[in-house]
Length: 220
Image 1: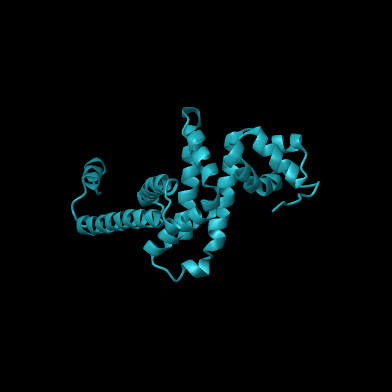
Image 2: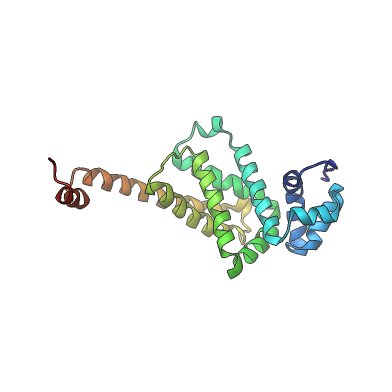
């Protein structure tokens, strides 16, 4: 489906509108100027303006991932997620993101190959973090301590491994991917339960840091 973009559209609006079409073309032309030009032509955007909006291949992938994140959030609004337990929320969010790219798996494969290049490592990590952070926030996570980071690192690993299975999954309704994801999510839940139990058991144990603090700053 071709979308015509207004002539006075901002660069951000152009990025948002062109991202899905670029991904469609990237399956055949890679994340390249050719894919961008085809998307721009289809939307009535000047090619030079499109090149200004997307200064490189990674910026195209960035915009597409942001579009996929938006689709994921749209598929699972707050009122839907509010009825689920945490495990179901995370599973549903990952599956929603996979569903959003299911018809563009070749574009995703090419995007991951490009992001895996050493020069793109920092940007790739930032894009991955953005997506898993959104998943946890949509799931209602409000942690601000070290749990904030551990949850996202663990989910990032699970999501990355799931994508690897997903890209080669030819089963009906990608059943193999769903089963793999379910096992990994179960692992996260066991870890979180064990971590919570450990925190509860050690809450009242003597703290070395508090002891050293008292030695340095004795009560008067």
